[in-house]
Image 1: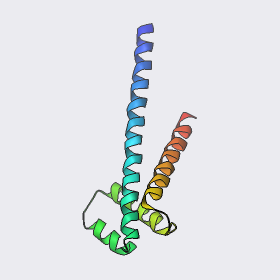
Image 2: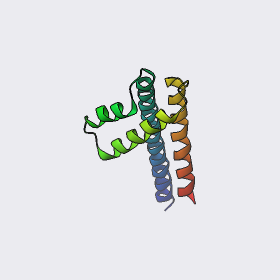
Image 3: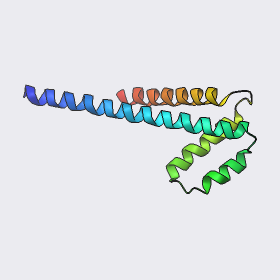
Length: 107
């Protein structure tokens, strides 16, 4: 019985580590996309041109939803913000959102 409890505990820790790693990768992806969008914005590309070019790639609906929301947020940010600053802000925003979700799930 003790072995079964320990096995379950180790599996839970393993799943938590894998999930945290997946979340970290997602936030890195968001950061990279935000950086690319900000560079396009800073180079003079309009929001609608960027959206059109992105939609031509025919990505999955989930990815489209995430990227289109990100494009909208980046184009609303201060024009003096560098691409690196925007990437950092979006990564932190993602990490805070994931932290909030994990706290809700723990209740």
